[in-house]
Length: 201
Image (cartoon, rainbow, N blue to C red; front, side, top):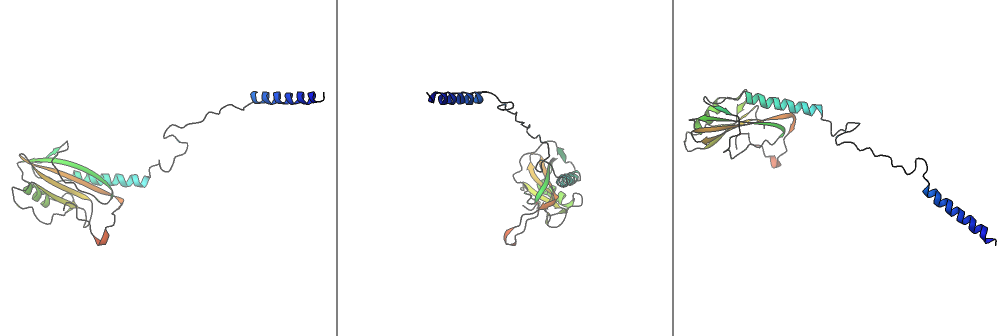
């Protein structure tokens, strides 16, 4: 007979415990909404998403220099600037140092030859650039392409490279223009090797 009160008390505790699990407590069990930021949204700017002003200024200056060289480009009489890319150029200039800003421009010159155009470009510098073409192109109608490079100073890896290709009824000229940023660096070459001048192949 003395076991029944103990059993009753045990049953009562079990009921209370079960009731406590089922009864919500103020603030308990309520999910707090998680704040998910929109992509790119942040309360504080991160270093990686903020453009650095000095780099932006360098890029802008390099773009301005490249455009200035293009604006000063001197082409033979009769040259017509093309608004679209002209095909048929099989080689391209690699500018090894960087960062560098690049521009391309194209012209056609009716009734012109590759050698005459190359020699004219060699003899008429763009702006204050110096040519890397150390000898005139031979007067040979069989020549179907030539390059004439211009750089701002000795050993520079920026400037303009004109490529001339033979076309039906004349030639096409492509100008590859590159201007380095102020912080541009040139990868070191092994065993004392040196970079070739732009326009020399």
